[in-house]
Amino acid sequence: MAKKATVTVRQVRSGLGRKKDQIATLTGLGLGKLNRERTLEDTPAVRGMIDKVKHLVEVVDQA
Image (cartoon, rainbow, N blue to C red; front, side):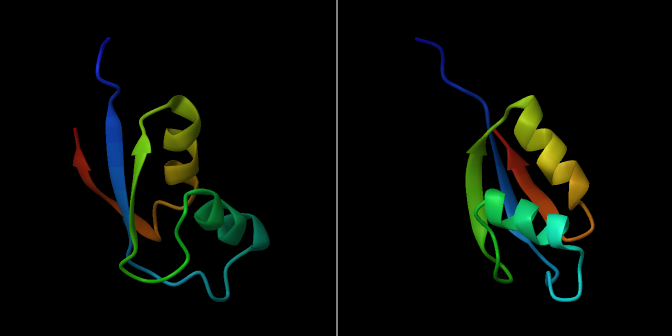
C-alpha cells in the first residue's frame, strides 16, 4: 500500500477580525490558536483551504 502524501500547516496569524468563512476554514484545518500545527492529507480540498487562508498560515513541510 502506498504511503499517502501529507502536508503540515502552522497558524502564524490570528483569525480575530477576519471574515467568518476564513475563521471557519481555520477551524476546518484544525487550527485556531497561534503556532498550532496540524499534519493533514495532501488533497486538492485541503490545498484549497490552505490557499484561502494563506495569509494566516504557513506550510511547514511537504512529505
